[in-house]
Image 1 (tube, rainbow, N blue to C red):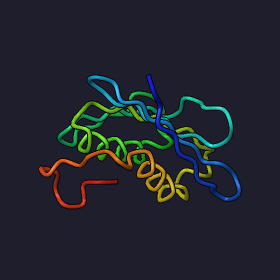
Image 2: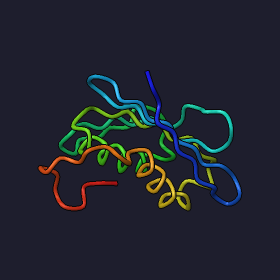
Image 3: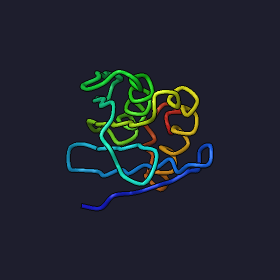
Image 4: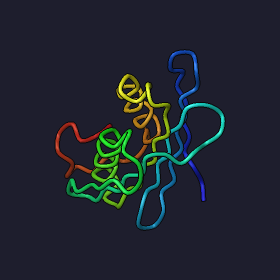
Length: 118
């Protein structure tokens, strides 16, 4: 199993991400700091269906990222976001950029709607 990783400095601290593609799913993890931690967990299916499985704090960000990844990969996607409580809202745009870095090089299907990429 091979993880794609990406990192962006946010307010002077490393905001990190890792993504692994399985045969039938994609798992994406986002966290602040050195050690990966499980956070708000969202599941997304191709077609725009999402549900939060654990936590609430970063639910909307998890759904946005998960739905975009599910559309891009055509697979079920699990997204975990672990950020400090005060950081979630301000880090949204940066998280989307970080997710985009993770999927650079993934072939985009011609069937994808315009703007479907991250």
